Length: 139
Length: 139
DNA sequence: TATTGTTATACTCTATAACTATA
DNA sequence: TATAGTTATAGAGTATAACAATA
Image (cartoon, rainbow over all chains, first blue to last red):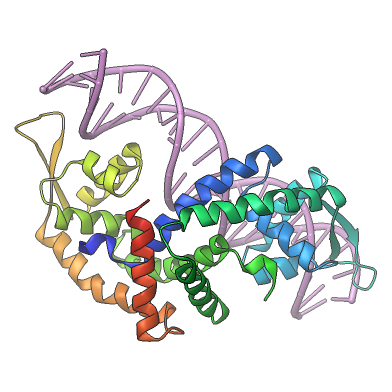
């Protein structure tokens, strides 16, 4: 093992790169990328949220959020309605069609992650997730 | 804990994002990014390598490698000399100046990684590295 | 005045295809 | 005919600044 492949940054990047290539393959029939899938997942879990909410929680720039939501709305996966209590913002809701995409791809995505993490034992995979969550929470 | 922040892909991405922002800050005075630092590190550990060698091992496209090496050569961090045994390829070598940059930033980078991984105990950090290496090796 | 969302724009990073020079 | 490197170009993805509507 050499110095150049010992850094956490390098290792995280390569594992992620591998996952994202596979993610992209499975998501392309639905015309969304991994980030947009994440946004859809967030909206499902947080109905009536605003673009700002997603932007903050997922740490995605708000101008980038506009194009993500434009895209998801254009595909009929998400619905924008004005928030009556604050007409500057939207109430975002996932549509039935969007929910279908979410559900049909969930198994694929977890399977893809499992595939990339296959060199690890079950306890190791669980440990990795716990460790990553611990870091993410305090980010 | 909700569904949207439970995926390995999401978690890996966020941890990496945090690291890369800090990396970029520390490397910008030397006019290189994290990937170029990685290339420099590889050349130090593999003197007389070719652009193809780096391209394969670091899984970076060969056309992208051209601009990385152009950049590093322009800054005087790397030297291109023709390989006498195969004049299609180069012998790449790190310069004294390049070595200085590598050494002066090494502490910073490991410190940055430690900072992001601070929520983890020492054994957990070590475990994370072992787990990531295990996945990377079989990639 | 501050905030949500939008637009126009530019920048970074990377990939594709066609080229050259060597093998 | 294949390979290492190069160039021109185009495509993602993202960020900055200025703006409209609303608070």
